[in-house]
Image (tube, rainbow, N blue to C red):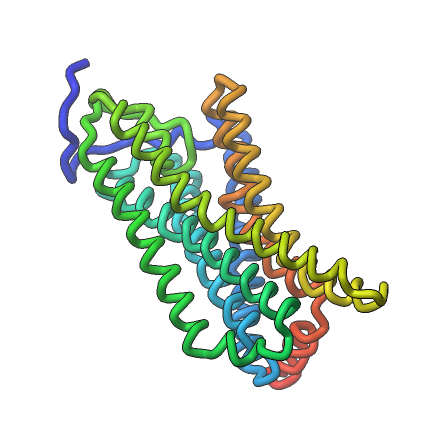
Length: 309
């Protein structure tokens, strides 16, 4: 097949998670339920933080932005998959595929950087509690979120530029339920050796730097907590980081799991199933992880529900 530059009228085909017609309704019901739970959980988190003045603190400001990023992250991929399952169509336009991959990268990177900002927030809260409100001022928090967004936007635009330069053969079939940029590089008809080097370099910077920041923050936090003489105070300090640490392990653990499974397995369809964990399950679980052990969030939610009722 001769390579050709795709135009706005060209189509790609998302093969999804299964070709079995009997499984499609089950997948539709499952992913619709998970998407609605994701939307409800994260919206409740945002509304609880906005409505309760006790939650107008740096940590909850970052959490509400993380919830907004999680909503956007899921909305990038799941609705299109649901439409394809319902209409029994697998097609997506070249422009739609390019936009989906770019927005997916944007909010995936934003999640990554916001987790690093939350780690820094916990570092200041535990290591310098007396200066916490001075250091984590509203101005600094706002700047950190804006900086996170612009860095993520830069990352997504770099991915967009690289993918837009590729040539694809006609009738490209993507063995995934969304336009994963890494899959597009594998399916290109043109030479991608330079792009492969760039993608690893960009990943090392935009993924490695925030992860290094998280690891350094927790190294400092653990060192500080171990110097506390009281076991009760140690437990209390550790408990303030427990939810964030769980979310970090879930986010990076599922991402690493998908990467390792793709390296070991030769089945792209199996990789697509594994990627459900970080694209759908992680955004759904995040608000529950933060609220289940958090009395402030629970109280704010109950107050909000009582006002509505």
